[in-house]
Image (cartoon, rainbow, N blue to C red; front, side, top):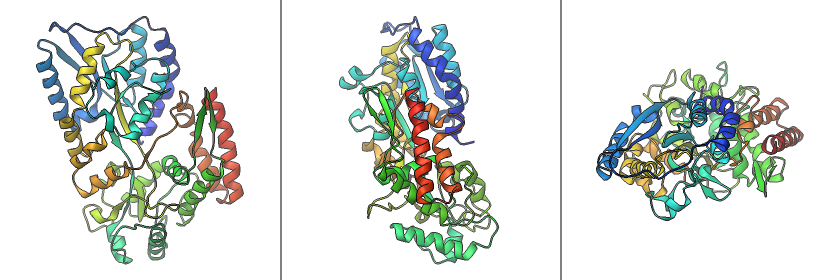
Amino acid sequence: MKRKKLVAVACTAASVALVASACSSSSKTTSSSTTGNTTITVWMMTDAKTGWDKAVTNAIATFKSQHPGDNVNLQWKTWGTYLTQFSAAVKAGDEPDVMEVGNTQAITPIAGGAFTELDSAISAGTFPNSSTWNAGLKASCTYNGHVYCVPYYAADRMAGINPTQAAAVGITSAPTTWSAFTADIAKLNAKYGSTKGYNGFELEGGSEYTGLAFVKDAGGEVAVQSGTTWKAELESAASEKGLANYCTVFKASPNNSATGTDDNQDPAWSNGTAGMMYGLAWEWDNPPAGDTATSPTPEFYFNIPSPTTAGSYLPDFTGGSDLAVPSGAKNATLGEGWLADYTDSANEGIMAAAGDIPNSTSLTSDVTGTKNTTYASGQTNPFFVPTAQNWVKVDGGTPNLIDTMLESMTQNGCTASAIDSAAKTADAAIDTALNG
């Protein structure tokens, strides 16, 4: 399963209890003493342990040097269970002083009052590079105009081409225009379309973040807020134009599944039945069957060209992680200090070297390697999902309302009427979910 599916399950299970507990917690945020006998508790995902442990070690060392005698109790957590564990900790009045949270589910604890507002600390310059934080990550930390977490690192998607197949059809570089992109898909299908299950561009019917990228590219929105009310806008003319462009790519290849999700693209890439796909960094790790290269060559990684704006490319969804100080933290001030140490420029540079996208646009130069820099370049044009308290009800449960809309469109031929009908149905469901 992709990470978004794992965390969605955890968030759906924990969200109601988390919000209720946060609002009723008897614990209060306190400023700890700095007399040198305090141990702060930090919850981190194991990604850092395996990917950029040096940054963690550096932060702890810096923290100890700035706070002699104080210590850090680092507790490693996993994506599938951490929200449930946090909900239990809130109920017990035993929250950590710092915790990592996936950016797509941060809004639930924020709206429930579970995280400390950081506006004053930001204004005081506590956190390095806060004036140039990644816009998508900062959006995930912002609620009603206030900031409740610190951007940690970003992850996004880009497209890639099977280099062996590209060479066989005369593709010598990644496409930079919409017409070249669709022409390359056609070339791959013409050569390999007789192979069972083959798609020049693998795009399953229910591919949420790809679909939303097309919506944003056309000037559409999933939903907008007016006061305390959210209004879905997928049936707007702009949004439906984007959905039609999504359909263009879906229909360009003969075997894309109208009922599939993007979980299905990984095996298609590995077995060589996907000439191109739009994926996360780790999805390129296994070279496709029949490929003579060990992995796609750098020139075959690319951001999908925009069908609406010449010289531009699809807005890029910002995935990733944030770091927060829970409202019930007993050592909030020290927690903020550790966050500042951990997300300084040097440590974000270590994360960049490991393949992450830093939390600040001012640190993009720390990203090295053509593959990683292509990923990072996508975040110059980022987008994020609506920061609504109940967003988890839209894409975190069963059914996923965005995937359901896209699957309805593709199952019904991607006609204008099918797009409009699916968008109207989705808007009604999203209105109920967000305002319920």
